[in-house]
Each structure stands twice: as C-alpha cells, then as structure tokens.
Image 1 (cartoon, rainbow, N blue to C red):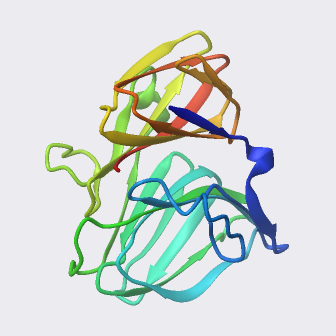
Image 2: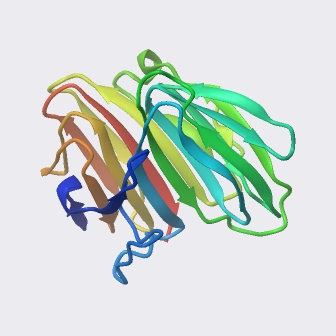
Image 3: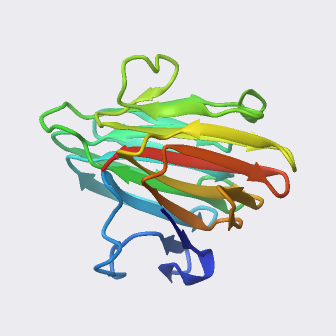
Length: 233
C-alpha cells in the first residue's frame, strides 16, 4: 500500500553542471519496475549549477511541472514565453503538439527543483506555459492544489491530465489528512523534513508510492514541506 523509495537508493547521474536523481526510469537510468506510477511518468530531483542549464530541446504530449525548491529557473520557449520561477513557485509546461524550450539557472547559487512529468489524458492540445507563486505560508497546515486537470481547481495551474499536484507545509507534530481514494495512486516526496504517512516514515527527499489507500494521514516528525501527486491509475 505504501512503497518507500529512499533517496539514497534512487537512480541518477552527476554531469557536473547537473546532479540528477531519478525516482523513475529516465535517460540512462532504467529500471523495468519503475517506469512510472499511473499517469505519473517522471519525478527528478535536480540540482543545477549556477550559470548552466538545459539548452533548447523539444517535447510533445507531456505535462511538465517544475517545483522550485531553492534558487530559480529561467524558462524560454519557441512560442515567445520567457519567465523566471523562484523557490516557492511552480511552473507548468504543457508540451501538447510540440514545444521547444530551454531551462537555465541564471542565479549565483545552485538551483534545486523537482521536475515532474505527467502523461496527458488526451492528445492534440496546443502547447502552453505558465508560472505562479504559491507562498509557503498559504500552504501551512493544509494542502494547496498547485497544478490540476480538474476545472474546479480554479486557483491552480492547468494541466491536461486526470491528476493533481499538491503542496503543504507542516510544523513538527502537525497532522494532515488527504482523501486520495482507493482507485487512485499517490506519490509523495518530502522536499524538506521527515514525515510519517499512515505510520510509514518518509525522510527528506525520499519518495513514497501509495496504492489502495482511501485516506492518507501525514504527520510531521519535524518541520516539513511535502509535495503530493494524485493521479489516475
């Protein structure tokens, strides 16, 4: 029901300018048992050196969410979008029928991000990009929807998928419940601090793959910042 994926056991590669850890198969890291989790395909934990980044490259038919943990990332694409997303903020790029983009750390310090790819529920959408601040104070003690494919989540960034990405911050000892639904899959990563999910300890930057749990109960073992993907199976 909860499969723990410790940070120390994640696949990955250190390219010098990029130190990447992969929760699922990605690039040269391949694990046939970790090809995704429902509609969730990629969850990378990236540290990008100052003045470096990903040069222009194409994507199609993927919803790509960037959760900035530290520093900032600067996005540019062939549609003319240009923007900077800093720690505490989130950006969404719907690759749709095709988009070419670059992502650079233009800061003087390393940038740390979660790069999250979710498969779209249908194809043929036009490509788009957007960014939005989500102050951590507004997430205190509760989940806030950061990106969503559901019309009722009007304050979230839009993705074209049967999925939500949520964030919350908890003080040590605080408990937070979330109704996932037994027919859904969850993937939770603690960006900061350690928590327990239904009694299972999840430490900083660990992943927890959640299946067949109607209700999640998250208790902070220390001050924590958590990110949860709620996706169709």
